Image (cartoon, rainbow, N blue to C red; front, side, top):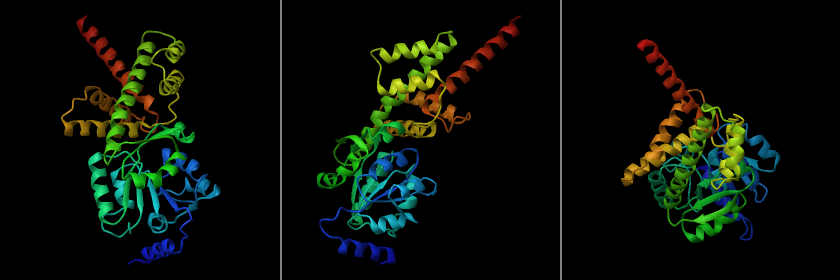
Length: 319
């Protein structure tokens, strides 16, 4: 047994039954940092992030800043993971048994492939822990406002333990069954979200190219039957060319690929998502990889420019 494992066992033995379990949170990116700001107000919290910059503000709010990710697992019974991808998860939770998971509850909030989540759930259970899927729907502003929607999967008794902490970060918590049902549901939700925002961007591009007032288009869409919190926020960004990331292009592209891959495994047609995948990939490789998902309009503008240029070239050749 490692010294960290011994330390953890001692912590759990000496903690009084009435004491709230210590909670850990790993991954303080665009979403995680906003979510933890709400969570730290309701429970004692230990945090860790690969880069130290996001941890300073949380330390001022009362969170304990761990020096390593292993320290979080060693001292916390419930550990939330909000990491960028599967490789990042494997880096903090290696499969070699070096991290003691006995009696731990691991809550995965990252969006990853359902097959990866299923394998992770089996591994954690084999090592004496419990596993909860809890991907969220919503971008950074809903995270700041604690208005996210969490889709959760796991054993009901474990969900009962975790849910109060989720409600500190999320407006709604929906139980979806057993893993990987929550992550698969998240991909279904994102199929709609990504298609809507891509269509909205194309609407604004159409207006631009036809000489219309984009502010007027925004006003009409905001009071129309298709209006939603998402459409209003993204219309505002499109009207003012505000690419400040709420949901960044690379994250959306990752979701597109996860959806298409899962659909192929299930033999499901996803023509809209295949088109969105190409468009977001074009936006990411043309210098918009740090911008909000509405910057997908740049891919449409690029295509239009080249179509017009090619048309002029063919016209010149015909003279």
